[in-house]
Amino acid sequence: MSGSNNKPQQSINLEDMSLQQLQKIKTQLESEINELTTAFTQMKQAQGAFRECKSCIGTLRPENQDKTVLIPLSNSLYVPGKLSNVKSVVMDVGTGYYVEKSTDDAAIYYDKKIDYVQENAKKIQETVEQKQASYRGLLEIMQYKLTQQQRQQQQQQQEEEGGSKAPVATAS
Image (tube, rainbow, N blue to C red):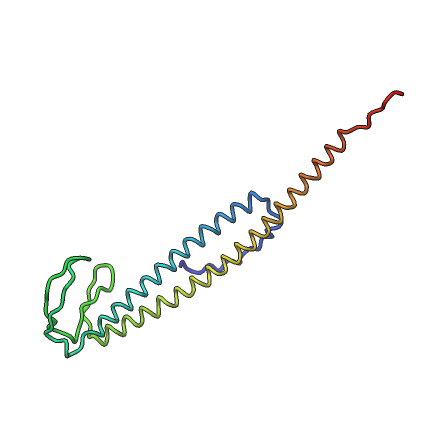
């Protein structure tokens, strides 16, 4: 999310806009909703990854010291290894930086990350809900305008049909 903008927002009456203008706004809202939904999904995936990391830290207990474990080299390739240290972990903290932390500090770090991501996901969800409400309102206005347009066209057709039928005089 970008920095806040202090400019007052201008209110526009959608009922005064043409269907073409409304269609552009509809397309923009659809795009924004899709982007926000993608961001929300990514936040939830990140939150899941942080929870998994915290869960893994929970397995580092003194009774597991020197136990044989499988160390992943890729998603499907492992090598056997031994847990020689269950008191600290080396963590990826982003952009290729790694930090060694105690298991307690690492658990606290992941709790903070989980909370931070949860807060941002909640903000995104609220924004999506607002955009969806705006989208539904826009669709109602568009439907109303389409109905009005169809009624006007029907009236014009009826007037044209009624005006072209001049009474025919018959000779007796």
